Amino acid sequence: MQNLSRSLLAVACLTGVARLGSGVEATFEPSARIDALFAAKAGAKWPGAAVVVVRDGVVVHSKAYGHANVEQGLANTPRTKFRLASVSKSFTSLLVLQLVEQGRLRLDDPLEKYLPGIVGGDVITIHHLLSHTAGMPDFMSFEEAAKLPRESAPGERLNYSNLGFQALGRVVEKVTGRSYEARLREAILDPLGMKDSGGGWPAGPSEGRATGYLFDPASGGVVLAETSNADPASGGLYSTAEDMTRWVKGLLDGRIVSPAILERAWTPVTLNDGRRGAYGYGFMLIPYRGLREVAHGGDISGFNTYYAIYPTEKLAVVVLSNVGMRPPGPVPEAGAVAHEIADAVAGDRLGPRWPPPIALAPGVLDRYVGRYRIDAPAPIVAVMGDAIEIRRDGERIVAKGKQGEAEIFPESETEFHSKEGPVRISFVLGENGAPTQAIVTLMGLREFHLTRLP
Image 1: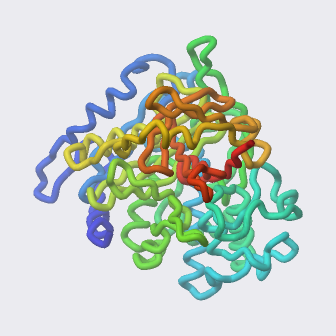
Image 2 (image 1 turned 135 degrees about the vertical axis):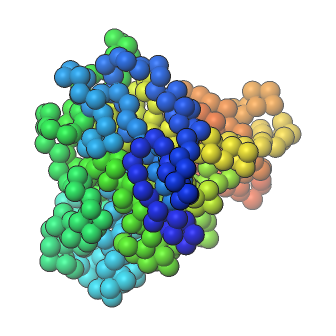
């Protein structure tokens, strides 16, 4: 990581060409591959994205695609402002970790020390909030959640919670005596020269800002996304591709927090039962085809964002898009663009996209057949249904829920994954060898339990 930190100090330009130390210019070969991802709508009035790639210390690709405002025909540029959505959580974590380094708070401090009156605040710590293991609810206001029982004991499950990061934003304000946005500006944005970044997003067009869109399957075009507000600590920040490059550089050269505490933030959380999660402190830590990936994504009101750092490849990617992830359309998702770049740079060193499945005897597969109740918050049940049915189809095993059915592939006698989405199912076996429960994990970031029905 220190080598990558030093190499990113040499960022020298924001063009699609890298100027090397010898003064010789070299074209970044994957640039054509990136261009091809957006070629389907090239020349048409569609939203798009701004993409920056840093490799071996220089910006090797900086280019924007599509329109910031379709109706006005305004093009995206690397200096167009996009909503960051949940990428904001990485900034919040760094504000907290700065205070830890300064000795102004501790990771094992209880939340109650700073925000009294929250249910469970005496046992929820700063560590739990940073790692999404506090058991905080989601899908409601912070004030509502503060009065409700926790969804799980601290450290028991990894359950992604916007409200947990809203609590951290309030902790930052309590400790510093400054508003969240004022502290962010003085501690990160101004020192790094991020002049086109901040919090808040007014409704309607605004100079220099992209407009958010959603793909419309009925018309085959796009429609304006409804603007929504978000707490800056959990999802309400905005930035540009150029500014985000400054942020990545500052992050990796130790200008925000020390390499030691950054490495801790990049370490997957360990749950109470010894399982490892796919989140650290404000960073998503899901390996990509065997590569260590440090990343975060976000999706809000017609914007989707993704940045990824691949330390072994000395590679960093920023993708900011002004079209929402769902429903999918011809403009690629930000995360897919980042992974396409990783494929192009490190293709010969990448592993398979999915773990190789193992063969299980039909009798073993029959143990899992049945109906399982979904024990999850109401918003998840509304999307997934109240139960999952698992059946055997020859030598295949299939899971069916409200959204349809998909084959699940065994990695062992108890671990299965789906290729239709980032879903894993871990079965918990009873005394007779048949499962009584299962744990479903979505993207490694949210888990809920299944209970087998009679």
